Length: 159
Ligand code: IPE
Ligand code: MG
Image (cartoon, rainbow, N blue to C red; front, top):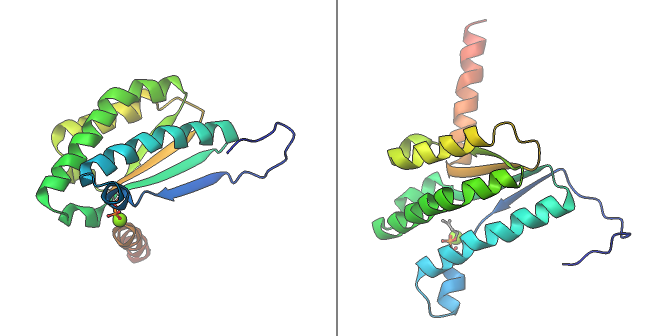
């Protein structure tokens, strides 16, 4: 989409995107699902640039849900490889773009090196005041609501 500088459009302060269709994209081209996941990761780049260009303050990307852990082992392995490589190769660039990175989800399920990469990305970008990027990884809406409800119940029980 191109936008003339005098076209007034109202930009929501927060946009959330559920990343989906990688497998269908690949299948339609006779490619393995991995190729679709790779292409999906590349689409993140364009999305970030568009969000920055439009002045979006918060961008939430739902990339990998808690349910996705039950996909075939080989696919989970590929996705973890992709996540690892993405964090290794893109964190410095996101920092250069003044993006603040936060990850929500159950990170205890990731391998130690990925946990460290996530922590490193959050720490490196913690002072940035540009786009707020939240990556939902190993994230479950139900799990999130259950955790919040439990915390509220504990507060109530504690008076
Ligand atoms: C989204 O694409 C990527 C993840 C959820 C990891 P899908 O893998 O769900 O692709 P489709 O829905 O099978 O096309
Ligand atoms: Mg899907």
